[in-house]
Amino acid sequence: MNPQANLIFIISLLLGTTITISSNHWIMAWTGLEINTLAILPLISKSHHPRAIEAATKYFLTQSAASALVLFSSMTNAWHTGQWDITQLTHPTSSLILTSAIAMKLGLVPFHFWFPEVLQGSPLTTGLLLSTIMKLPPIALLYMTSHSLNPTLLTTLAILSTALGGWMGLNQTQIRKVLAFSSISHLGWMAVIIVYNPKLTLLNFYLYAMMTATIFLTLNTIKVLKLSTLMTAWTKIPSLNAMLLLTLLSLAGLPPLTGFLPKWLIIQELTKQDMAPAATLISLLSLLSLFFYLRLAYCTTITLPPHTTNHMKQWRTNKSTSTMIAILTTMSVMLLPISPIILTIV
Image (tube, rainbow, N blue to C red; front, side):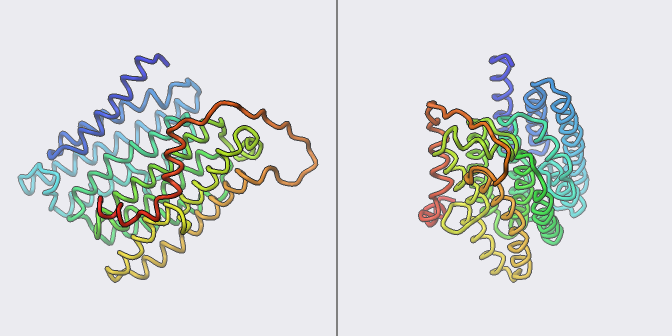
């Protein structure tokens, strides 16, 4: 793609995100969401492969439907209350429609079907944008309207998302699909706590975005898209593969690593809110996703499974790893000890 065109699309993405997260009026928030959708479409379909065109079409249709629902929800609220302010979403029907629209934008169950397909059809760099920055505006809207959302509905969506995200990721061989189901599972953790402690949702999102960015950038560096090629890629940059193992375990939420922090805080907050059964259920369901993270981690570091066919070892590259990946990897693994500082900032 032309670098100038690429730059315009990236700037439009940042502009759309900034407009949505900084607006008070529903129409401005909707405009930001539309700019975002239109800016990402050329980045999804830039390879001109039929799979990429299909992904772009699916993305456009689902996001258009979700945007229409956002507009419909805000207009219904304005009709009943006379308010266009985002924080004044008080009408129950409007908040119900908005929850459905945001769930469709994010890819929460039962509106999750488009997300794995779109991520599979996109390049790794676009997949990174779809999994991180494209999730920020809808989460910001949920954050601003969290006081008027239905807790029962969100808890149901969250538990279903964690269950299906873990369950459907078990049998995948394509890494982008595994990461898509991982994203759906993490969104479940964010949705379950948004009504009770919205700041925890933002903290969870920031840490999730950081760890996912690390994984996507690492995979882009070693040029790996499926599990079978991941098994033979360890010879390229062994040190980077070792750090990829730790980042995957961090994303799974294992205790000494950064990813344990949001899970720990969310379980603690749910218990304070007398929701111990929901906390227990969502914790048990996250074991499903732990299984496929361990599978990815196994393929990353255990060189090859025992078999008789000979595999060509890939050449080790002398290319140095980028500073960005080094910083992100360190943060993805080592932020747990400074969690009190993080909590005072958030």
